[in-house]
Image 1 (cartoon, rainbow, N blue to C red):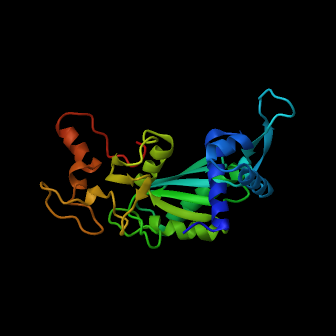
Image 2: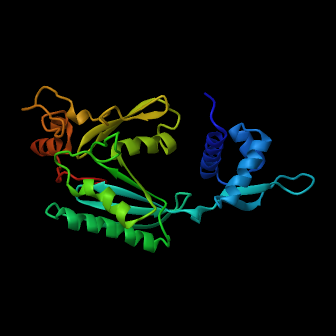
Image 3: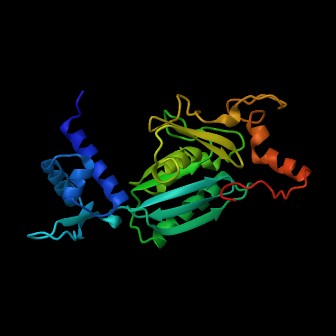
Length: 288
């Protein structure tokens, strides 16, 4: 079934905005060449995006030719602001950026394991509000959260998992309440890492790949035919739950102890390294 006119316009607009994000300012002719759209269609989308305040003329092309040079269109970076949260078991890191991905401010909030759910959520939300203020953003358009654990594909919420703080699951609702109008989404951290590699990193020329995550936990992200695959239960890539020989028990639906995680996670590898006489600091959660 062909797309409706409104859907086609939305797809064309999204394609053009992504190209302007990736390539920088472009002329209408360059947009026509890169998108494969007709000249009238490109003219319409340029008018539409300009009227919406999403793009504007930022200069002229340097082509030497008769008549005026072609106008260069670029994204209005301050048209909206975004926040990204890296949620760990012991705290949260917040970045606020403009539409071109330029980081305007950042904040962090350490959260101890003995902190109650209410105070922990308040610290995390306060870090977001502090970064928004320091970044000069009036409001946020979207808040993206990367967190360990399973995401329920039906609701988009973090599922209850053993070993993860309860405040993780309360954070989305608190942010939606304190940041009215902002779109708040949460995604598994390994899946986000795979999307980043697909768009900007080692997998830019790959439609199908698996990203393996080795750290405090063990996991993977699966991209097939260019799309991230989450699975019916959200468990695609959760290799830490795989039952394997050599463990004392079997993993459950909410606890990967007894699975592959018990053999390959940091909690198992660090003591093994110490037994072998290797430097073995305590298991780190996050960038460490």
